[in-house]
Amino acid sequence: MRKYIMDTDTGELVSESSFDTSAFHDIELTQQLNETLELKLDPSWAITVGGSIFCKPVVENGMIYFGCCDKKFYALSTEGRLIWDFETDGVILSSPCIVGEMVVFGSYDCNLYALEKSTGKLLWKFPAEDKIFSKPCTDGKRIYFGSKDCNLYCIDTEGKLVWKFRTNGPIETHPLIHNNILYFGSGDRNLYALDVEKGILLWKFATKSTLRAGFGVWNDVIYFAGMERTVYGVNTDGKQVFSFAMNDYGSNSILAENGIIYIPSRDNHLY
Image (cartoon, helix red, strand yellow):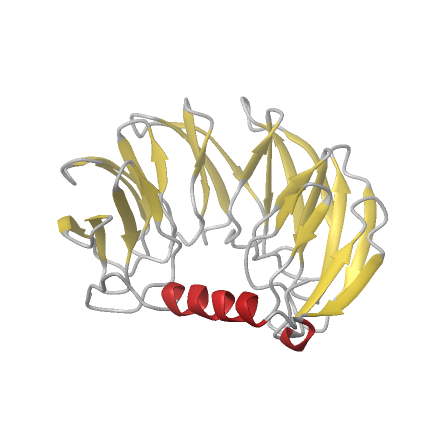
């Protein structure tokens, strides 16, 4: 395994190293490490569902929420017991979002669903014009999500449209709210920054490819990866701070924490 550390201000590679277990000469420490790994690899339980699971589950208050390609949304206890399930008319690739007492997610049947967390009762659903892959996000008052219909939607917690913003490409990224600005990427190769209240365009930043992965933020810099294998750092004024080339494109959300950016890539590396 290799570890890459990048400077969050310049994007330059600070260090590159490999994890070599032969460096540990203390036999007791090695045995303790091996025992810990064995425990982590031993599942406490497993549950069988009717299809593949691509979305990231959400865990809250002893409950696990996730969608599945069998078109169902599931709620389990953390002991693996099925509490309830809810069937939609399309596969569910959208990761869920908790909004108060609701769990909200999108489906490939073109609807955004809001279910009661405890019972799975349908509270409302909001129709988009095409499939929903984007994970919703919330500021507690409103819910924001993108769709393959090229729109970024803002709805209230009762499922009513507040505003929508149209781009020139499908929106599959997961929106990010930071300091009252909504950031998201589009298939039209742009990163957008909107006023979170009114949906007014503040600026957009052009890249060289479709944007599909998620975002990270640190010290008012937004980090994201394009499918042309480049990681970008853009400040809150829409100015590029740095770019960093990978061997393949980032396949998931970026984590920026304590001055370090962590980027999973399809080139078998974690940067």
